[in-house]
Structure formats: C-alpha cells, structure tokens
Image (tube, rainbow, N blue to C red; front, top):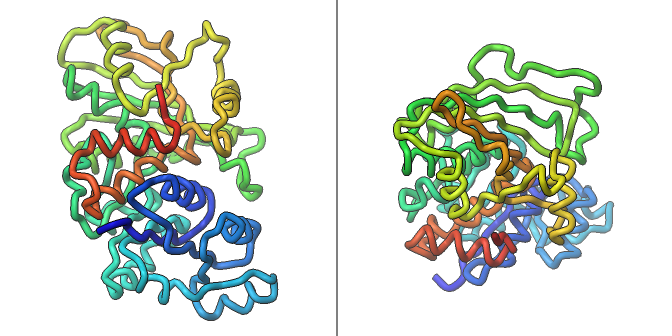
Amino acid sequence: MDKAKIVINGYGTIGKRVGDAVSAQDDMEIAGVVKTRPSFEAKLAVDRGFDLYASTSERIEAFSKAGIEISGTLDELLDKADLVVDCTPGGVGATYKDLYVKHGVKAIWQGGEDHELAGFSFNSEANYDDAIGRDMTRVVSCNTTGLTRALYPLDLEFGVKKSRVTLMRRAADPGNIKSGPINAIVPNPISLPSHHGPDVNSILPHLEIATVAVKLSTTIMHFHALNVELEKDFEPQDIIDLYAGRPRIRFVSGEDNITSTAEVMELARDLGRSRSDMFENVIWKDSISKYHGELYFFQAIHQESDVVPENVDAIRAMCELEPDGVKSIARTNKSMGICK
C-alpha cells in the first residue's frame, strides 16, 4: 500500500481535527469527508481542499440549495477507501457498521460507541501491536485516553495496586450552545462508580480502578484528580522522571503561573496550535505527591483533541503502514507538532 485512503464520516469537533492530522501524514491521505447537512464546517471542508460527500442521496439537495458542491454519497465514497474514521455522534456510528462491512472497508469508531461494536479498544502506547491488521477498532474517549496514558506507564514501572479517580468534566464543547449547566455542579452519573473505570479496563483489563465524575460549568477542558496505590515504593521525582519520558504527557507548573485550565489553553494558543488544541495530557508537576505511601496528582485533558493522534496511530496499525508502535507515535507527534 502506497498511501492509505481515508474517509472521515462526520466532519465535526473530532472529524475536522482528524482530517487535518491525516493530511499531515506522509503515508495516508483523505479520500473524502462526509456531512449530513450544509453547515459552516461543510464549507470549510471544501475550502481545505477535501472532496465533500453527503451521507445519503436524500441529503444532496440541501447542499445544492446552499451552493456547496457535493462529490457523491458515502456509499459511493467507500468504494474508493481503505479505511473510514467514523466521527459521527455517539450512537450514530453503530448504524453505519453494516455499510462499512458491505464495502469491505476497515473502520475506526470513537469513544461514544460501545466497546462491543468493534470488539477492540485502542490506545497508542498500551496496545498498538494488537491493532495491527485489524478490520475494526474503537479509539476510546478523551477521558479514557487521558487515564490510560497516565496509568499504563505507572503500571509498567511500579505496578498499579489500585487507582481512584475523580473526573471533573466540562459540560459541553465550546461550540455547543444546547448544553448546561450554567450555575450548577452535576453528578454525572449519580450512580457510583462511573463508567470511566470499566472503559479503561477495555484496554487494561487487569487494572484495579474506580472512578466518579461530575459536570462543571466550563467548556474548555476536563480535569482529573488521581490517587494511585502502587505495588512498589516510589518518590515523587521517580514519577516525574517516568512521565518526562512519555510521548504525550506535558508538564506545567504553578510556579510558571499555570494554575488553571484557562492558562493551559492560553499556553496552547501561545504554542501556535491549530484551534488551540492540546493533544497531550497536561500534568501539574508540582501536584505530584506522595501521601501515606500513595501517589496523588492533577491532570487536565483537552476533550476536543487528545484522541486525534490516537486515531492516526490506529490508522497506521490497522493499515499495516508501520509495525512499530513507538515509531508510529514519533511520526505522528512530529507531524502534528507534539514535542517536548
């Protein structure tokens, strides 16, 4: 295979970012992107040089009335593709599975779908080798991606005896005007523990993890407070040294006047990141602590972008473009400007 031909079905928050990331790679290219309606994002896709396709033939007329050129339908596009990255809203992606199978196209779904849909959940560091050559994969959610990046190296180096995580979740993405809360803290879910721990177990099944989650009146990032009981003894500097060597973890510090998620996003802007994206886990170095023999720290997760490099690596593994996960991560990071 020269360049893998990739379809992006759903050109919204995640889809447009995956589209740009795929375009930055030298071993894959965009065959086309798919939208259901003629939104500003559909126009931007055309402006970026992507061939735009309608989800069904019934949708074509709406694009024509909006003056947006359509190259065909998703059904037609899949005949030209090696793999489709489904970035449609949670629950919608599952409805396309039969169509993907019919066309014999490999498929990646996002964390809004159930693990059982693909039968395999992916994280670049934890199980790249297991994704090589697969026909179907699910890239886990932003929160699960962030937790796996944090817990996987800890488990390798020290052994995780038990992890307890409180997730403080953004209420909606910045562009979403339909969701709250405005002036409330919402247990989400109210029943405990939350689903995030079992989702981590879809990648790391042996890991002992319990999670609780609340929604806050913010749109810019998720925030995690982690408490981890390790099998081996450690000092905070050991954890700092461990995370310093991981490819998608970035340290920040209160000493540098980064004391909130707002300043983290300002850092992303100052780094010149497209859409102010922060693809890495952001860990406060000065929060890494040892208390009664257990590890504590804070991290922030940019929900709009942290899964994007994982999608690129999943494409590379499934299409057998790179047999070495470490090399794939390095290639993806370099092309996307994810640097230490």
